[in-house]
Length: 95
Image 1 (tube, rainbow, N blue to C red):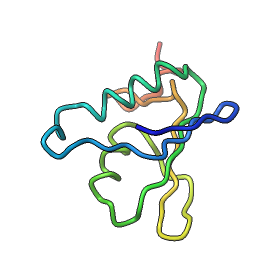
Image 2 (cartoon, helix red, strand yellow):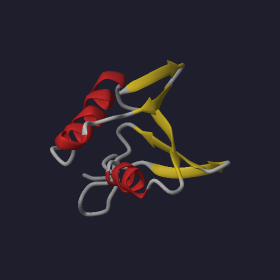
Image 3 (cartoon, one colour):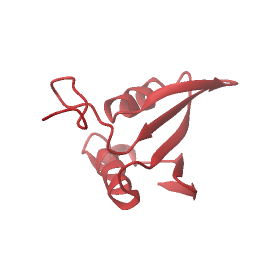
Image 4 (cartoon, rainbow, N blue to C red):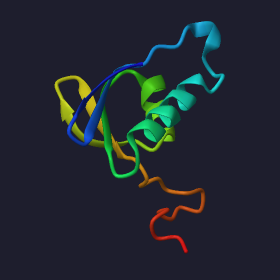
């Protein structure tokens, strides 16, 4: 994983997992580790090629949402701590 940080935003430039190690939760664990390191309220952003359906599914599953488009990329973001739990409610709103 290659990232850069500017103020309260961490941008993921690249995540790469060798084919034989994919589908072993390594990518999910990298995202969780990054979230734990940067802390609640911080943003994570990234770009995904519009035709990269595997990456799109991965990032959606990890709570990222599209906030824009640029050329042939979708722009994704996630605010750490704003995850939706399995019941569909925001963690901040759950009692």
